[in-house]
Image (cartoon, rainbow, N blue to C red; front, side, top):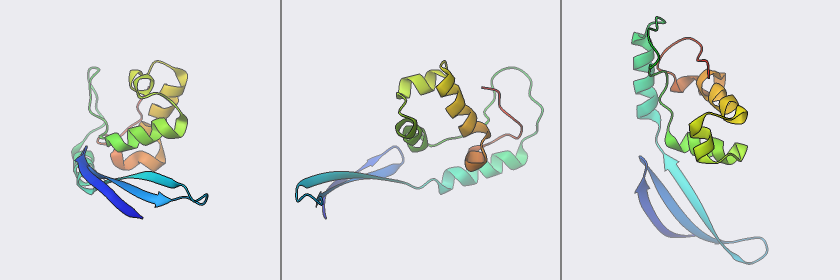
Length: 116
């Protein structure tokens, strides 16, 4: 593999690699590396200070890295705009998983269950 270039993006690094595939043809692979540890530490600190009392409609309940949202779009084959609008059933299911699922609880900044 040969590194073609690297650039800073969205709090991380994107690297472009040139390599040869199994068929002998050249391929370009994009590798995105984001250190989410500072975000996870902030989330844990906010969660430890939070209460379950909510008043009004707008509350910060999570901080989710953009790279995770992009990966969810790729994984579920959903356009970014559709996911962000939260209007379709599949977008709501993905947000429910991101905000209430066990695998993503480190992104939470408030306890409780979020209704999407």
